[in-house]
Image (cartoon, rainbow, N blue to C red):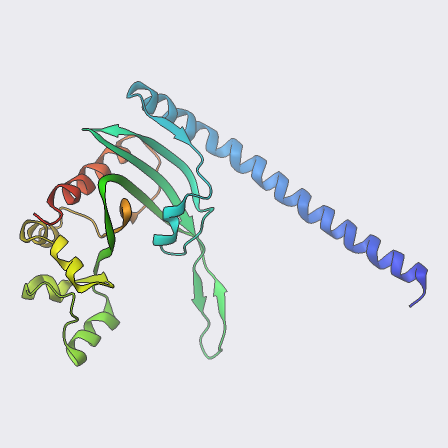
Length: 225
């Protein structure tokens, strides 16, 4: 290929790259302006309680969430409530949707979650309680309960305890089982000293901060008790 054509090819790619970067920069500016009223409102309200608001990209506990996106947190409120350190975050991730009749997938609309995190006084082995879905229910019917089952028939039918060490099921106390069956606590997971719970939705107003923290605090109080 002649040198002139190589130079033209490089210039064309450089131009396209600059255009792409420009579009991304414009999109970020527009998003920031649209999002500013929400951040200012929640920030003002959080300040009244001595809490802080920040954008927390790269927090480690996103590895426990669907999508595992380290840059999925767009807004996070952190502080202390009833003696416990907490964070409530607006998290989203891109979902991959299967394409029928093809061995491929495509991106769907982002999934939004409100995530609550409570820092525990001691460290625990990884464990999670999640509601059973279709495949999990079928697997239980075909193969029976795993070693992490609690022995409570209704709870084990509706929920599953995920843990590498079967002894971790002891954290799911009888009182905590009652709270799960009554729908008063969210699905949760623990890694080290961080207790996480999440629910569908977007963090749009201050009321959404206290509610998930209160429900997750109930989990923290009943762990193993």
